[in-house]
Image 1 (tube, rainbow, N blue to C red):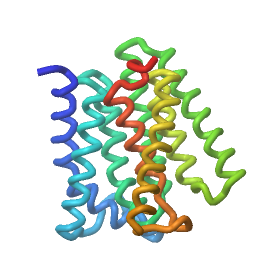
Image 2: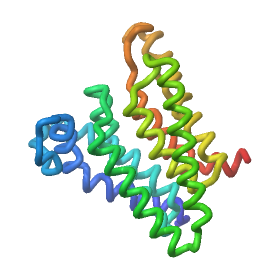
Image 3: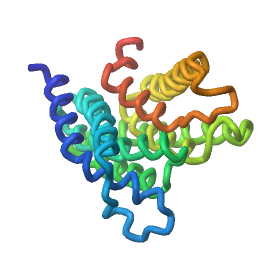
Image 4: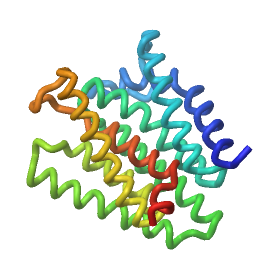
Length: 225
């Protein structure tokens, strides 16, 4: 079995096992008045199934991207938080700071550990630069075209740019581009099917997360570059 397949399988199983808790978070995190949001709230069977499906996908992509290396904890951390963010954004059109901040801290710590083990500190510095670059570009777009996406998307983009930057500048470009591409395809499908109009808001966070993990899993930046 290849390291890619091993990582994908392990990632999918790990995130699937965590999905019941993540489903609980999708109910408590959006509640701004909840002081114990990390405990979660009872979730219905339908929510458990939906969260499990997202967790399987993101976990498999994260594991395939890590390829059974020291990067696995960092990428699985992104997949776990990303699962809750995808479900919440699809339902509420929000990306709560509670989870985006958790993803940022987890990424900073776990990628630092990976960089320390592999002596990849130049990669870590590039990750910081990548996150700053993506945040700046998305913030500028949001400032010039406020209806394009919200500040939650900008902050999430910065976190994803950090992860992508660790893998290289081409990964940053293709990862964020993939997010826009997935978003465009989904919007067109919704328009053509009559399930949305030009004024219907389409959550951008899930597209960014899937685009990022997809590019890293398929190693697109290396293949194209």
